[in-house]
Image (cartoon, rainbow, N blue to C red; front, side):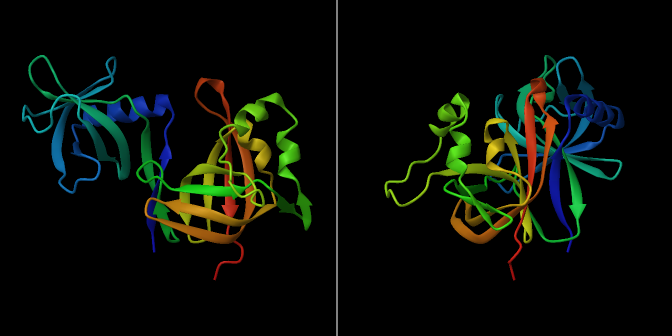
Length: 241
């Protein structure tokens, strides 16, 4: 079956898409997160300087300052973002677009949409990992720099001394065969291609699932906002039924 996931657009592409939205005067769908009722409005224009989507309505559905989710379609592509309700001088309904814009894509295998809609986290045991059958002590890696001493203050400490320290990352994309993460430079020493972690915990809001074995299949860097170095990590579930 085909499922949808979202990829983040860079600021220039975001602006370009919102300009197209204003020119096309397409419809947007807005709703409050967690509520079933959704509202459709026609776009009047997009104010590029103020990053505001001006809607062709004076209907007062949401109070000023209400945080909303917003989706729309352009040329067969679907987009999703978070916006804030506002009113114009002439009382038109306005959506302030300060947050990131995401484009939806289709994939052939079953996939759960996680970021940005759902909060799902993956928890890794920092005691040891495996690479080509060899045990790697991750604690020795993290002790190499002063930066990591600061970073370890953020890591959950276990009361049982027999248990290792753990670190959690928000899952970007999750499927029946694996997951992907976006991490910073500090966390990058925890991952390398072909690393294998045991008993990785996938934490949903209402449930925890333990994956017996997770293997790093790709680890690539990219430049994020403000030229900060980030990494994309792809992990595979090799022994799942």
